[in-house]
Amino acid sequence: MKKTSLFIPLMVGSLFAAACVETEKEPTVPGEVPRYVSGELTVCSAQSDCQADEACTQGGHCVNVTGERDATEAIQADIDGLPEAVGMGVPYRLPANAVLKISDLNGDGSGLRIDQPMLFDGAGALLMVENGIIGVRVGQGADWASLSNFRVEPQDPEGAHAGVGVDVRGHGVRLDNLEIYRQGTGVRAFTYVGDEYANINSLQFGRLKMEEGYDYAMDIRGGDANAGLMRGVEVMGGAGIYERSFLGNTYIGATLKGTHTRSLEAGSNAGRNLLLGTYIEEGDPIPTSESMHDLHVGGNVITRVVGPGDRLGERWSRMRFAHENSGMTGQVPGSDHSPIAWQHGQEGERWFLRYWTHPSLLRWGISFRNQGTGPLFWTGADHQEGPAVLQLGDVL
Image (cartoon, rainbow, N blue to C red):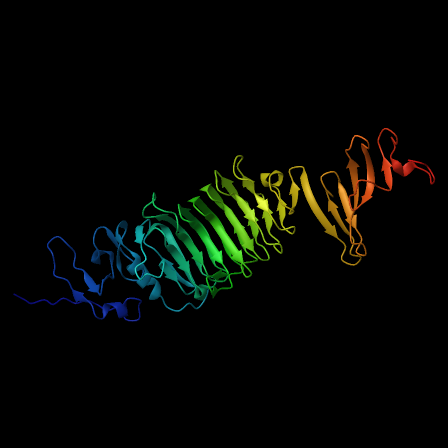
């Protein structure tokens, strides 16, 4: 009989070469395909190298795609083995429509870590994340990384909500077309986490669906968490959006339905958040906007938001104006009883055009400091054509 030898080709120059050098063949079990292992990982060059419930990943590792066995080590080995980015980031794609069990294997509180720019395509995968950890942490070395097309949910949906779906620590990170279910915080982006600082300005998050978050669906905070664009964010149940960046971000078409612990909370006295077309379902908690520089345009939030922020639309408005040279400022409305207020830069208080509702007055007037008396009063009954038609010396 002619002898044959087993030849395992090395893919020199590929992502798999280093991992395959020290492989050894497992004993062949009848009915199973041969498997080649390096440490705890199974290396593959084709789907036929893996079991029926596994997929051969882009990085050349067999990974369970049913959620029955942990996939963290194999996926992280893929990520760590990617070549250095030369453009926008290295493309990486998870096995299509896979269920991947993600756990904290080294005790750092995170499942998967991304530490260089990459185009991470989840290909419809479900990441079943260990309760209480960060599902995917995007580090400071991953500026401008892009993550898309996957869902995050806890391994134990009924367990404690304390984890973070995606933790963003990189500058300009893009998140797109994600679903995040029953996490402590769906998406977290902090300038500081403990003593660790990161510049996370210019974030762009789009088409996010976040369900039943315990603390926050989205939580953005810090002095360098500004100038971001959040579009098409949908929050369903649980907690809502907490926006506490220093200089503000832009939100387009945010939708919040069935939230119960909070809906939208925008803060920071220096914040300049722009919120366009925000919808908050009736019965959800009252939204707040603490910064007088916030601007809400359109959407039903206009009639419900509490705070000094400007708003325009739905027949409700609160707008402020300033003239850069003279220092003249104006405000519409001026107060609860005043349609307009104004102030010259050389005066320390405002003038108000207002209506006095006290039974002894019931008249319009102009008041300084919005006091109970004013230098000029009139009513529609006494001056049917308005006070402007009065001649000098007429008594009001």
